[in-house]
Length: 166
Image 1: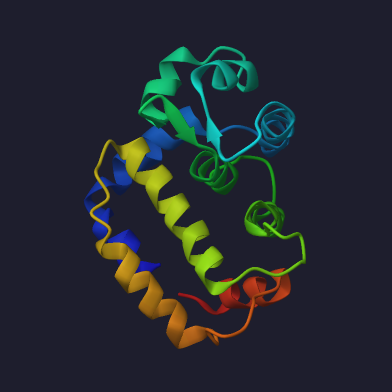
Image 2: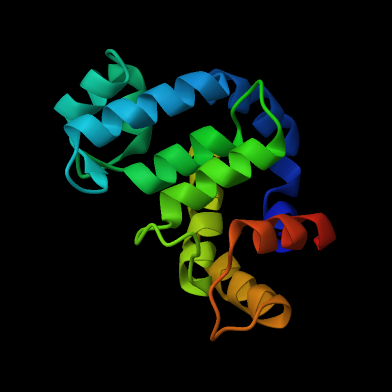
């Protein structure tokens, strides 16, 4: 993920200031996600659902909305990644469960790539920057050198990958 960090390096001081305004305790993120699952049938959140999940939040809706719909995977990926009050292992398990669409305790490399890009997109939005998607090509290359593209990844393998990554 060094390519992502290098692309926002000059913004890291402002990211440190902006993220706390968008971070929540991990327990609250899980609560929001539970409400999301009960009110939404897909991975897009409309303005009414957003207000229901986040108890108002009209001012934040404009940051996350794309044509009045919010990408739930991007939103919850970023909220979980930057959540306060928990170990990284718990965050990773939560992120993994978000992208384990078939609930078979493994995700494809494409799903893993989408997870990481969702976190990047969340970060870009917090910074008010546009993601040019150049990171997407670098990420795919980075993953292809570390994982067998024909196999699925378990959460344990993902822990190991994170522990080895610099």
